Amino acid sequence: MQFNLANRDIDKAIAECDKQKGSVGNVMKAGLKKYKEMTTNNELDTEQKVLSIQKEIEEATSLELPMLEKNLVFLSTIASVATLLGLLGTVLGMIKSFSALGEDSGGGAAAAELSKGISEALYNTALGIGTSAIAIIFYNIFTTKIDAVTFGIDESGFTLTQSFAANYK
Image 1 (tube, helix red, strand yellow):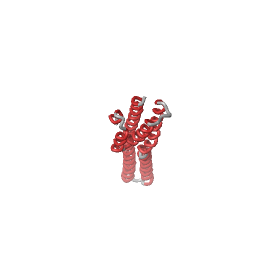
Image 2: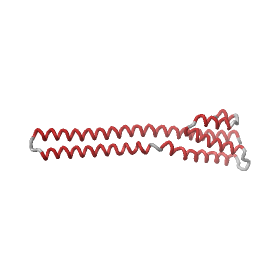
Image 3: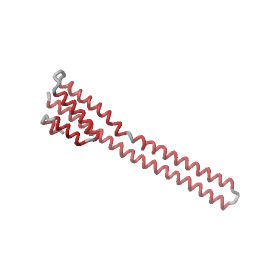
C-alpha cells in the first residue's frame, strides 16, 4: 500500500485493501477513499485534509471494532456463569451429603452417602472452575488479538495521514 501511495496510485492501494480483506483492510479502504477525495479537493488546506482523513479512519474503526468484539461477551458470560454453576453444584452436593447424614442413623451407610455427596460437590467445583479458567484464557487470547488488530489499524491510519501530508503539501 505504501509503495502505491508513494507513486500516487491510490486505486492500486484500494485494490490491495480489497485483496487483504479483514478489519484493517476495511478501515484502510475507507481512509484511502477519503484520501483520494482529498487529492482533488481545492477548498481545504493540507491540515484540514489530513484531519478529514483521520476522521474517516476513526469512523471506520468505530464501525469495525464491534464486529471484532461481538463474541467476547459470550466468553465473558461463560467465565462468570461457569464459576457460579460450579458453586451451585457444590452447595447441592453438600446439602445431599448432610441430608444423607441426618436421615441415616447407621454409621457405614451414612458415611458412604456423605462421601458421595462430597465427591459430587467437588466434581462440580472442579468443573465450574475449569470451565471458567478455559473461558478466561480464550477471552484473553481473543482480546489480545483484537488489541493487535486495533494497533495495526492505528499504525496504518497514522502512516496514511503522514503519507498524505508528505505527498500533498
